[in-house]
Image (cartoon, rainbow, N blue to C red; front, side, top):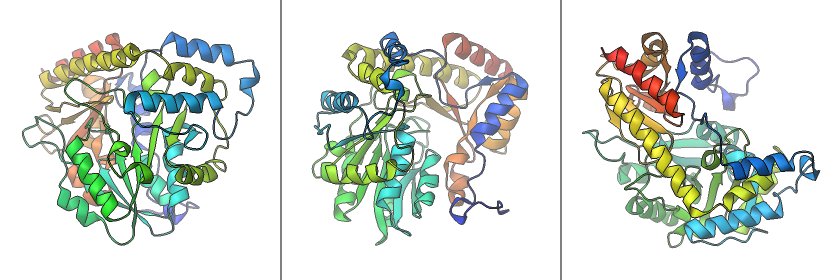
Length: 396
């Protein structure tokens, strides 16, 4: 690997992301971008109107460091309403610049140099970078797709236990999971809880897709299992739930001592963020149950449209249980199984952009994801319809 000048050793290997490459390729070729996970349709009017009303008022100035009291109260009420577990909005809720800052702030706060973080791969790309910036060591455990293509991704409990060493400090769990769309089952969560308690691990759980879960699956927060609340920081955000990914409003809930540690790191990162958007997210979290159920139904419909199109194009899909994403095996149309090469030629072949799943793996385990590619289906009917038509022409 060529060393990047001036970049610290902790971040060597973390160059420009493949998302930037693929998005630039989409622009250059006029392709439909199903690579990056952001919706191209607006969020609920109640949320957008609240943001517009807040602009030009005192909300344009610095909000309180931990977040506005109203937003922290709304987060606590929302978690109680949908998860059944209670947090004190004064001491156990912290507003952050999206889930990414929540995760990075937590890792910076909790890790000593050389501490290890056990996590699952494929993984959202900021995890490994956050661990590295905190001076930690990532210990990935593979999730594997079902051999038949039907059913959820799974992990081997023995591999999980083998990844834990005396240096392990944190277990990082993402459910619902990006990029696979997996929702960890209650039995799997019980295994994670047992390992965390046995080894006295702290737990970070990334739940940003908590409301985007499809028929037949059910999201459960690891913090709700017996013995887990006191060691778990729960992270979520508004971006995916309300179609406002650019607002970057997230939060951390957990025991007061752990939240205070994250707040110490967070105050020297962004300090505060998203003043006019905090009252808007407050309004969103109070929307009726039907909004959240409807958002999941709508996205499930979009998933089915894309899955049908990908299948017709000869790309077998591991149908996701949640999130924005569908993963395909490219080997039927790319005999060498090179997902990155497939993505680089797909704009020319079909006028569509996707992301190779290999980028979500530790380099030592890249072979596990080499043949997989992720498509995003959080797009409008017109865009999805055109993408499916283009992919169909590729298969002819």
